[in-house]
Length: 358
Image 1 (spheres, one colour):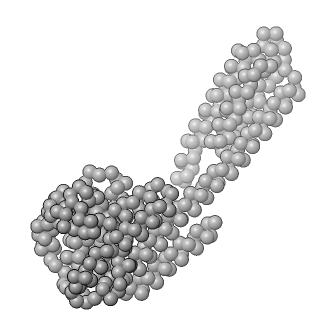
Image 2 (cartoon, helix red, strand yellow; image 1 turned 120 degrees about the vertical axis):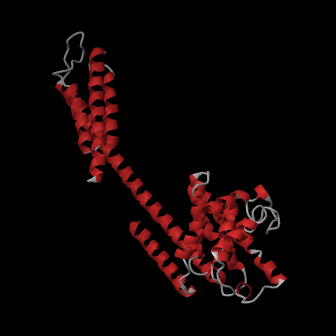
Image 3 (cartoon, rainbow, N blue to C red; image 1 turned 90 degrees about the vertical axis):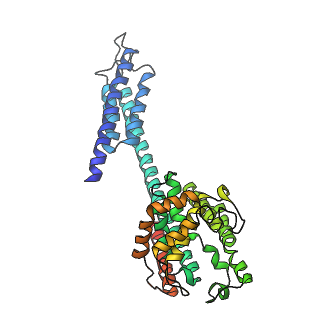
């Protein structure tokens, strides 16, 4: 029913435009001297319009109606001399009108069908890419015991709450929310014996861990070069920035480059606060979760040094929502192998859908 309600006014509009334009063109033909002159060709505009944008009824009605308006009974060949046009000439013109309408309509339908199939395939490809990215995220997550369970889901939720009332471009908000789970993707390049070490890291080991923003940033820099679709390219660019710089600090004491203040991309500043809050409020193998109120005080103390001042101010406005997210999305203890199998299964299902559509 919904499709019909949308389609009906459209076809009535096409019908009215075609009908009125035919009347107008017939008047032009008559007052310009008759069918012996060039003006009957104006009807091809009405025929083309109704064939391109109308259904089959409109596509066939317009050339037939045009032929009637130009028939010998209504339209002379030479108006001033009262010379009528021949029936054969009129019939030939009428057949050409109808044939042109049919050809245009068939070509138009073929193009629309291809565009529809390409749109469906593009959407399915984007879903497949999203599933593939999630699979990569889960594989990276499984390598780090500190970021198990629903850590990535919480980060996106934190970012959505934090950015909700901030005056930034809606597309940028969406890109940050979508990209923030990739912040630690570079940990896939850190040796397991360091990443999964139960005790405190040595200075040398920590220096190796500090390379993960560069490793992850380079991964997404390579991905960015291969992306053509502009919207996806912008999301990848945002992901690359927050991966590279989410450990930078406004006071310049972060890593890997020691950037300060406005040198740090906005997306990375958002990721930094969300990631630290989740690390503080979540249970880890080596610590219990810190109470929400204490997490708030720690982040407040880092205003202007560890965290961007405006982002901390916004966090203080919505921190109760952070608490709700942390409680509602607690880790469920899903094992890494199980998550990997689920991710691979999701990717396989999406790939099969693409193959079926092709």
